[in-house]
Length: 225
Image (cartoon, rainbow, N blue to C red; front, side, top):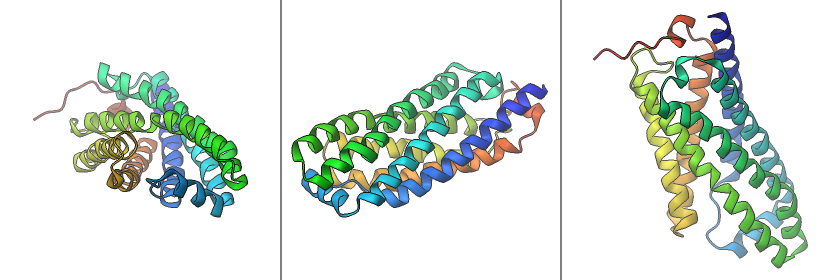
């Protein structure tokens, strides 16, 4: 029992820390430009900020992956069914995918933008954007985790907040899909705004796990209607 308690509280600590960093990243990052030339110029005009933001993003995503690993090893009710077990595993993989985007943008993409090397910029931007699709699936993983919390009367966060997290995760996925897959400009703004809300919920959830009661954490008693 004590092992469950320690593992989940450690996971909550890393989840909260990762979420604080992610909120800061998303606020500083802002929506991606619809036009690639505009995006390149934007990076060239503020290379230091772009570099710092993406190194912080790499750290945040790494902590998210660490959180998922600790949760999977905890044996707690956070992974009590197939959907949540899969969601935490997806959170790890998608976070690792997106770390590669953050590192590429902090290094080669920024360097190419500053030097005006359009060919290198476009090639590495395509790579970064491809790996960045991991964030869309990260958002889906969060939505599933939040939905699971919303179904439980003894969840770590109130039902209403878990529902907000679920909706924000789904909306973040939709925003990425609209903006990056279908070229709808509004999608980029939707992605940033809802990802901030999603990260605020993961912060709340992480803090709740840090203080959560041990007997509830290992409970498999279904929610009473």
